[in-house]
Image (tube, rainbow, N blue to C red; front, side, top):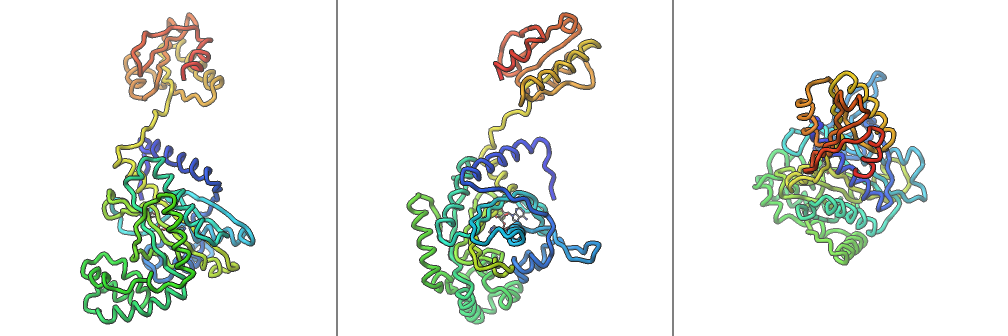
Length: 413
Ligand code: HAM
């Protein structure tokens, strides 16, 4: 679990701001969800034989003896909340959430045990137009953040759950003929979750996977038409994608469309954003037949990508650093600081505290990144004046009456 230090928070806040702007440009609304849910919810939705449920959840008994889990992802909780509050019947929703998720994975670059996701979930829309919309929304995020070139879109269709069941049998038959090439993990999955073998990173297994039957060849007409329409929309809007027939995702609830945005610049953890359609999960969690599609994006990976791209152009956090030296000046400075904050809403003013010489206070002003230093010494305090020094531009120092300070800065900031 990592800390986000004050030098890093401006980048986080900037990206969060861009996310909010893009989400509202598409009419998505925020939902805020608990960080803890009943363990059962995740078992039923993500799937009993997935890595997440088998080995990565932070699960504990609370004081009532109920089994609770720190959310490893947001899709299950979001759907639980919407079902609980009756939001799904005959309604369309476009929602987003943001916050920490928890998975007890082996930590490495781009993989943490507490990480932040922006999640988007839509309900009530059956067609591929909404699948395309959330892909377009994510693509707009990358463009706004200047990382579009660093990401590649991979898409696939997993068909319906019946189609997948039929394919699963075909796949197991195929792997039965190559047992000697499968590692222990794959052999275990052969019974429980054979599709995940397609995802194996083991080179020997990958050779067998190369020639395995392809799910896309075994999906039905409706799934095929859905996928075809999605690709037509993406083509028409010039969104490049790669058809990756091995893309199966690590969570069990998907059907039809799945997609990932992957970067080659992030090492082993290259997937920045991933999602797909999961219509079936609604009934599985006790709702009526309905439609759902969404994605989640990992903040740490997105920020690492922005960094690799040369960083974000962030502005300093303050406009004015107020230097005050001498007994009367300290009080005058304190008053002026309050007055300016009152008069100029949004002004970011940091007042020097803790005393010290002009020289040492100036050093702090310089380091602060502020645009201006406001200086009050004994002389200024007596005369009711302030001196102003631009810290970014070569400019002669100004001295003005303190009462004109608000007008001076209102014009310049
Ligand atoms: P996921 O593929 O498990 O999907 O996670 C989505 C994204 O979260 C990943 O692509 C990655 O960027 C980030 N992520 C996952 N695990 C970690 C980790 N340990 N450290 C850092 N980042 C991580 C889901 O969570 C689904 N709920 C997505 C979804 C929403 N599908 C439909 N709606």
